[in-house]
Length: 559
Image (cartoon, rainbow, N blue to C red):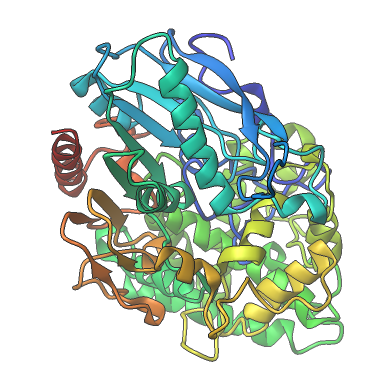
C-alpha cells in the first residue's frame, strides 16, 4: 500500500466468496471475518470487523507506515524431525514509526485474524496509547488470510497448517525476527499485544503460551471458550433487541419472536417448503426447499440480519437496533414486522456497498421496491457449499475461517438447541447439526465429520489446550461489551447474565483484568476516543471509562 493509504487493495477486493453471489459472514472478529451459517448476510459484503468499520469511516494510516514482508515465516513450527529443512513463506506486516521514541520505547503489536489485515490506524485506541507511550506500531497478518499465503491453495491437505497454534508460533517467531533486525535497537523494548474477537483470543493465548515475548495483552471481545453449538449468540441477540438503552424493547423482541414463529408455520406448511403465498415478499425463499439443511440455511439467512445489526450496533453502520425495532413496530402484524426489519438491513447493506450495487443492480432496485425479486437464499449447496468448496485463495476468506471453526472452535450459531431456549427457537431446523455438521461435511468433503477436535474426554481440544475460562497468566486485560453476542464465550463480570455460560467455569489469576462495557457491541473499546463521531456515534460514559481502564493497564504492564 502507498504511504498514507488505509486499505490495501486485497482487503477491499477480498470478499467472502468471489462469485456472482456475494455472501458475507457476520461474527467473529477485528480484524476479522467469521463464523458460520447462522451468521450469513445474503448479499451485503461485510468486510472484516474493525477493518470494515474503519473503511466506512475513511480511516487512514499515518504517512510513515510501511508495508513489509517477513520472508522466513515457517510453514510447520511443530515438525520436530531431526534435520528437517523448514519450508518458508512470506508473511505480510506493517510498521508505523510515527510515535516511536527510540531504543527502549515499547512496541504495540496488533494481531491479525480471519481476514486480510490492514495497517495500524489512528482511529484505533492502540494508536492513541502509542502516541502517549512513544510506541512503535506493528500489525501482523494471520497465515492463510490476505497476502499471507503459506501454501498455493486451500486443499484439505494444506489446511492442516491452518491452526491457532501455528498462528501463535508465527507471532513468536516474527517478534524474535523483528526485534533482531529492525533499524533501531529493540532489545530492551517491551511488547504489548492487542487483538479483538478471534485476534483478541490470540492475544490472550499468546501471553499464555509465550509469556517471555510480551509484557501484556489487551484481549477485546475474545471468545476464549470454544463451543460447537453456539446457541448463546441467539440469546444475546434477543437480550439486545429488548434493551431499552440502545433502542430495543420487550415489544420489539416479542414482534420479532412471534414473527419468526408465524413465518416458520407458513414455510413448513407446504410441499415444497416455503411455497405458501402468504409469505411476505421480502422473506420469500429464492428456490424450493426440500431438505432440513436447506430450510436451516434459509432460516439462518433471515436470522443473520438481526445478528449483524446487534453485533455491530452503534459502530458507524446503519441500521441500528433502534432502527430495526422501529421498522418492526411500525407494521400491523408480527410477520410483517419481521419482514420490515429484515428488508431494512438488506437495503442498507446494498446501499452502502458500491461493489455490490455495481454487481447486483437489478437486485438492489428490486430490494428497495420490496418486490418478489428480493428473495432469501435457500439452497445450502448452491448458495453456500459450492463457494466454500473452492480451494483457491481468490475465492476469499470464508473457506479458511470455516475450516478453523470446523477443526478447532465450532462457534456455529444455532437458533435451536436441545440444551436451551432462544428467542428464535421457532427456527428449529437451524440446529448445530445443520449449522455445523452439514457445512463441514459438505464444504470439506468429510462425510464422517462429527465435530471439532476433541480432548479424548468429551470436550474440545481447544479448551484443553488454552484452558477455556481458566486463565493463569497475569497481565492480560479482557474487555467485552455486555450486548456483544460473543461476550457469552468470554471472560466477563460475575454479575453478567452470561457469566460461565455453556458450563465452563471462570478462574482467573491475580493480575488479570476484566472490563465490561454497558450497552455496547463487538470490539467497541478498540476505537480511539471520538473515532465514530463522523458516523454520528458519540462515546458513552462506559466507553470513556473502559478506555481509562485499558490505558491504566497498559501503563502498568509497561512499568
